[in-house]
Structures are given as C-alpha cells and as structure tokens.
Length: 554
Image 1 (cartoon, rainbow, N blue to C red):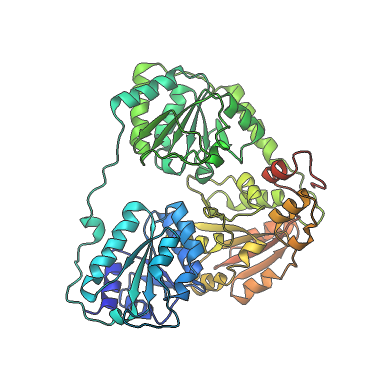
Image 2 (spheres, rainbow, N blue to C red; image 1 turned 30 degrees about the horizontal axis):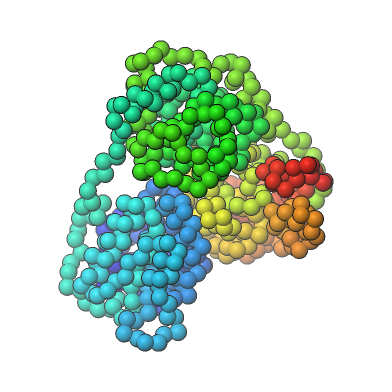
C-alpha cells in the first residue's frame, strides 16, 4: 500500500464524513483516492483559508473532528488566519498538508512548514518515512481529538508514492484511545460551594461554552438557591427561555444587568473562563465571591479576576453534586427569583430591543434589520456571527431559539470567517437552517465560497450588514477628530455577485423587502445584501469612543 492510499484509508476508517480541500499537486493523490470511499465526501473550497475555516465550523457545530487538506508552501501559508482562529476557539481540526520533497535542496514552494506551524502555536507532525506514515498520522489524529486543537500533518511528495509495509489497523483510533474519565471535585469542595450558595443573598450563575449539557443541573441549583442566570458570549442562548436570565455578562450587558452584576455577592461560573471580556477586566462583580467550575486545571488569565474557589470537574456531574448537596442541606428559597424581578428583567429586555421601524439616514436601521431576521429565522436557526461594528446588533437583537444556536467567529479578532464557518456548520448539521451574519468588508474576503455552497447545494443564508465601509474604524476616526472618509468604500452589487456564483442574491433597501426575502424557500445558498446606515452606533462603541455623547447617532 502506498502512503497516499494509507492516508485515505485512515480517514475512512475513522468515520470522517467530510473533507474540506483545495487541491494542489502535493495533496492531489489522497484526494483522488478518497473517491474510493463512498462515506467520505470531499468539498472543494475556493481558498485554502476558507477550507480550514469550514473544517473549524464543522467541528464547532458537531463536536467532531474537522478535516481539511491543502497543498505545500503557499497553500499552507494561506491558512494562517483560520488556523489561529481554530486554535483560539479550541476546535479539533486535522489539516493534512502536502510538503516539498525531502531530498530536494531547492523548490519554488519551499517553506519550513513545521516552523510555520509552530510560529502560530499550532501542533505539527511530519511524516518522516513511508513505514512511519500511518503511525504519524494517527498521532496527529489523537492529539487533535484529545486536546481539542488544530494539528498540521506535513507529507512530503516524494514519500507519498512510496510503498509502506504495514496494513492500516481496522480498529478506529477512537476505540483504541483510553476512555476519558472526567474529574469530579471531592465532597468537601462540593459541600463548601453548596454552603456558599445557601448563605448568599444575591447569587448569579454564569454559564459558558463548557456548560453544554448541564442545563438541567444548573436549573436545579439556580431554582433551589434563588439565583439569577447569565451567559458568556459564546454560550448566548443557553437560558433563552428562563425569565430570570440577565443576558450576556460583560461588554454586551444591558444597564439593568450591569446593576445586578454589581450587587451580586456570589458568582458561580460554570464552564466559563472568566476572561476580561466576561468580567470587564475584573470589575464587573466588585462585591462578589467568585466560584469557578471548569474541566481544565486552573490557569490565571490576563485581565480576569481569579476565582476565590476553583473546582476542576465536568460541568454536568459537578453541578449535579452541588444540587444534591444543596437540596440535602437547606430548603429551597425564592431568593432573587421573584415575580417583581421577572417583570424587571422582562422590561429590561423589551427596552433593550425597542426601536422605531422608521427609515434612517443612509439606510436601514441595523437594529430593525436584526429584529426582522430573528422574527423570521430565529426559532430554529444556527447563527454564525462575524466580527465588526455590526456584530453588536446581531448579538443583542438575535435571541435564537435553542441551546447552542450561536457560533461566533471572533476568536482571533479576524473578519472574513463567518461565511466559511457557516458552510462547514451546515455540512455538519444537515437539515439545520444556518445563517451567517457578516459585514460587507468581511464577506468580500471570502465571497467566492458562495460558489462552493452552490456547487454542493449547501443551503446557507448570508445576511450582509452592508454599511458601505468599515464602520468600526469610521467611528474610531470620528471619535479622535480625524476625517473618517477613508473608512467609507463604495458598495458593490453583492446580490449580483451572489447570483454569478449560482446563489440567490437579493439587494434589500427596506424592511418589507427584507421580510419578503427571508420568506423565500428556494433551495441552495442565499445572500441578502442589507443596506444599513452607519449612523446608528453600537452601544459598546458609543461607550468606548463617545462617552460624552455621539454626534448624529441616528
């Protein structure tokens, strides 16, 4: 068996269903070989960075390994942005890259691919010989899955055609890896937290991404202790149906929620890192004792306020143990979960979402646009949200409908990620309506992937918040007294571009047009070019750049 055949056979054996690829002469062999395995489908992207982002989106949406492949040198070099994004998010991604021949001193595509990966703080495994190739690929697989990190495998072209003497083990790596035993805190630690909850007068529980699967256990604790609940940004939607939800803790908190966070005497963070965004650099909960539950060993994080009590454990089992201890030790109480508090929080949410659906100077009000998207798609959609000035409107006006209904692509602070992540998510969760909310500058970095979605009939929706420029920089320039005109760009006909790639493309200039476009049920990808005004300023930008009041705020 040749090395390239072994690579394809290992992927098929591991149950890989999707491989996202850009073909080159250094990775074409195993791509063609994958055609022998009907259970594996290759999705050919139009850009290497997008192929990695698609694998990242697949991993985020499914919790399974995302697989992608690119060619050597420049092919790998173009993946840097998405590799770091996946690394920061903690996505298990396997990137199999071709590499230049081992024995060739000069090659036009020469790149030290191991050093490239290490410069990005990405795990890297080199295939060193034909007989070691399968073991080295399996090593990379085990690292990606067990550590939830991206891993690059470099396969030199002069080894790919070589014969290797070993058969591929028919038993998948997932069955040969040791069973994971999640840590559970000891009884004394559990009892101490239960005692803190029993005596706290204004407790708040914050769920992070690591709390997935622990909703029932968190509800038990919150209900018994009379605690309010909130989420990190990455867990948005976790408590969407709870009348005692405060929303997102940190930068995106509403004013009433900020008051209640400031009054809290105990904050229990479940599967949340308590980074400086969630804690507003440690000042959001000035009077609170912090308790943190996380499956990872404790590590101090820049800008975060370290918890006074840290329990290393699985969120579900740890919260179940705390609920048991709490219910044994004290009777349940109403605490903060009163009718008056529910009414206050309902008023907070209604006020936060209030906006007059009137024409704004320069385009649609972005708040109204997002409210319309949520009303027509939010009940069952999975939203991927890009980064930029527009994202605050998506974060606050898209409520979603189910747990894990949001994927945010801001992990590296990079724009241009949400569309390919959405494509990967749609491949991983067929039958789910996947909606990417992006800015116009962002989508133009990867708009060619609409061709990918069209070729494979992937029904992703792309809602472009088109303000005709880069609004974050526009408002920053205005705030420091500089001319913002360089941040204003012309608006290309994105709808026509989408149609050129075979997608449904619609330019939207009014709420009625938006509602009509959202009601379309034609198959395949859709792009809605929603022409919004840049004169409505997102609240975090208003606080950051215009603390004394913004000019022409809309």
